[in-house]
Length: 462
Image 1 (tube, rainbow, N blue to C red):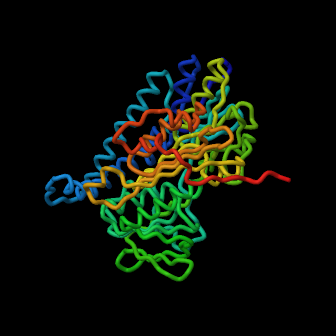
Image 2 (cartoon, one colour):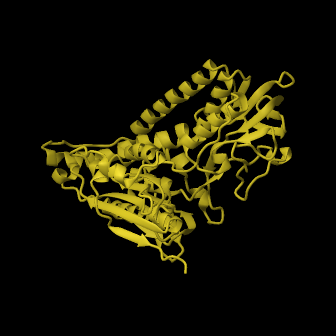
Image 3 (cartoon, rainbow, N blue to C red):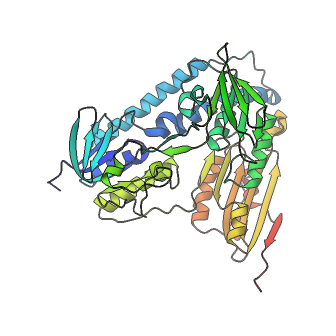
């Protein structure tokens, strides 16, 4: 490896790239990493972490209301958007510093510049116009929000990136999209007091999630005052004389707002990286095509995380980066299992899920038992809040193995992590039933549902 400047050059210092760089360095590799913006990537800087801090902030309006039912007398309250954003920015800066220090302590060389691939083993550092060489190159540049350029006036909109840095709080906001980012930001802005409209092209929000949870979270969001328009898209956006925006919808209606946010998907961040020059094969959305070891068709170039458009979640990128480093530099080859990945949607109420949806289960298995419980959480019995919790277990009736669990309600994301362990171990419904309940908790419903609510039976082929 002495013929190269580095054994590994990582492009992109998000969660996956940082993990790969650090682990490779601990295996003795000479590692460098380049980042053109801030260390920590989408999750830490402009994604999961700041977003969840805003979710927490948005929940206090309901906490203040609910406190009355528990004997608290809450005085006059007010909200300061600028204070929230300043405190959020301070925390993000702290986390970025940790990322930088951890890389440096691992012996990784940091380059604060855009890096572009100019050959199978060469990277150009744009800020200093210098080319360096590496035996292996790892692309971990993540993704970016997608804007539909066919919409007239789309330049007047914001994305989730800008939503985290607005100088003033919008009294009215319209959000295009029905995925987890759109749904989460709708809850954030509504909870903080904005008149919120969600515009989604599909029949129901949160495509890909279990239908019972999709319907339930839709209903609960509307109870919180969020206006949800399904089967609609923006066709034109106008800036009005007072600075506000008017969004025109496909079916003729209009939506007026102070901000219109597009959260209609993300695209792999591959533009201008020089991948085509190096001969790296890309997919239709610009994603880097890789094999099970994260290797591209160019043997010296690998890619991990959202830039590959496999499973676009931070923990997946981290696991892929770790596996890459162990495989290439640690003499411990391994691949990442992308099945049974627990995940959460920080909607309000929250979703936690692992395994197959009911629709997927019925397509994959001939006989499926559905256990379902819909109830009012104990915390709402005194608050008087009309909010339901949903718990659902899907079972392969032929083997009794649990193949999916879906939860809507408080702390559902926390539950999904533990449920992921159980399903990964191959737990059966009998295992759930044999587990002692913890009372009084909402989670005890997971081990006390005895009779299936539905049984799907596929007729045998004649």
